[in-house]
Image (cartoon, rainbow, N blue to C red; front, side):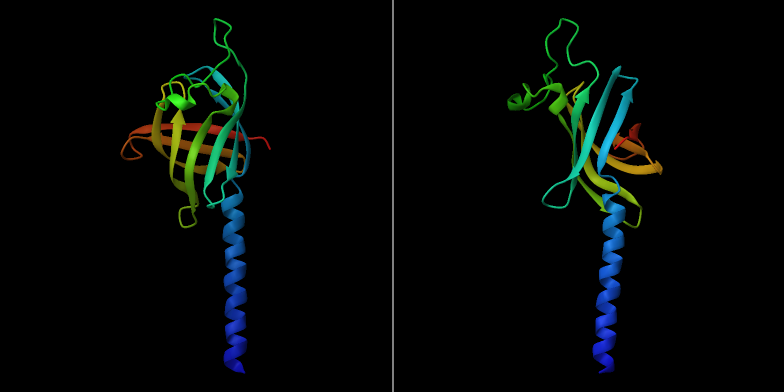
Length: 153
């Protein structure tokens, strides 16, 4: 009987720890406002979790939906020709992030730069409660750029 009680208590402890880790991992879900000084483009991105449990993000709004010539913004520099007609407010930017509970950050992902049509390794972490830091890099994190995204929803 003591073994059974110990076993049940161990299972309950494991389940409660899993729930805490899940909550920490899902903190990233939501909508973020991005003001990019390099591309002079403000947008909103929604981060979701896919069916494999990995985190991804897509643009859902752009401040300037047209190019200077008046034509609608599209993902014209995408290396995949099939994606070059994707509207600017539907471009997928974040791919395959997993949560690392030891580092309290989302790692092993990729970020897409639609301005240049390039993919970079990436990691993300919260600097403050609603301030997400997103680092894209080549090779190692020391060679990259970090952006600040403000969680708004």
